[in-house]
Image 1 (spheres, helix red, strand yellow):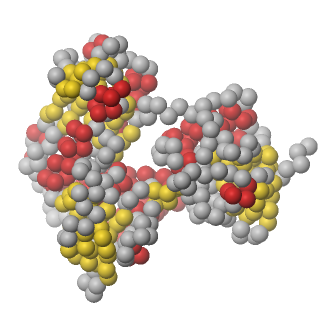
Image 2 (cartoon, rainbow, N blue to C red):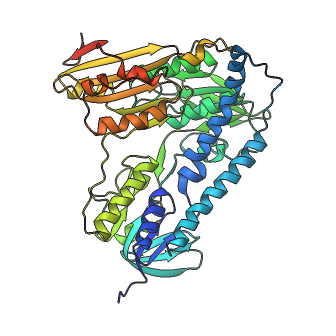
Image 3 (tube, rainbow, N blue to C red):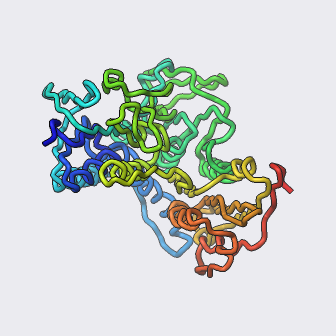
Length: 463
């Protein structure tokens, strides 16, 4: 009989933590899991799920405009922020209940408390002060928004966390950052009628994405009326009688109701007792793990955003399943972080998988680039007058004809990226795409009808 209270104890009730706890418990292991806030983690509670609901809500303003071109007469419209928040909260509560039910059905013991390490096999439950021991420990505490505490006036700003719980919809907002969170919220707030400005220190938004998509999205956002200030940052934020006064590095003065900081996320490792247990962290505060998610302490593992590998919910779940295979099924399995399909739920959307043109040109001597830009069929009768464009792009290694990158800007790009992840993961060639019959009329058919390269790149130079 084990001398430990638990075979496995999981600290953190997000996607990675819940999956590892639930599956281990279903295998007959005695499992405990502790979460200090709400089960479901960032993604379900205050991340991708409520954000996608907000995206849907913000799209209706354009849908109403477009309807006129298809013969519809739409009457006077209005938006109720409080109703959206109420509906969102109801759905999030339902999802949290499912996470808890899954754990309960698997016979995992659920603790609603913060948990900290005392040593390599002991955990303190802060609500009661009780300590428990575990043979194996998983840390899956995720990340938290960077509060940018060096910024004068940061205490007057909100992060993505607070954006989901605002009492009132602001009339104007300044969003700092150029990553997907900043870009998505800029489109959300604009679609809900908020005067929106985005400020970013870089030359172009979405620095890790393909340059064509970055420029295309920037142009689309600008055409809608979202103001984008590149090569600039917030220097200070002051509270006034009318709202907030913002001064930027380029000496701009902005008066807005709300400032949102979307300046990256920090691994949630503070005050977890990592030092006491001997768990090593890197300079960014992330837990250091090996290729099997094992920390510097052999019986302690870490999953998801707390390790700062790839900050995506499906990645945390995948790492959890690899942990289960490695520890409980005698099948050592490394998480596969290659060719991860990704979406930015901007408006228009971005969907991408594989290498960007810039990355591929540094890795391969010669590339073929297939690129199409066109007006989607839905926009041809749109009553809004928007000059919408879709961009589709395939990057092909000329030596073996494998498709090594696929990038889309436009409606349903995220859905297409998920499906494109399969052929790219399978190592399909351009010939495989070419002999695939098109589904007509669809936007996605462009992916299998681009027969001639738009241009080639040899040794980093476009031909």
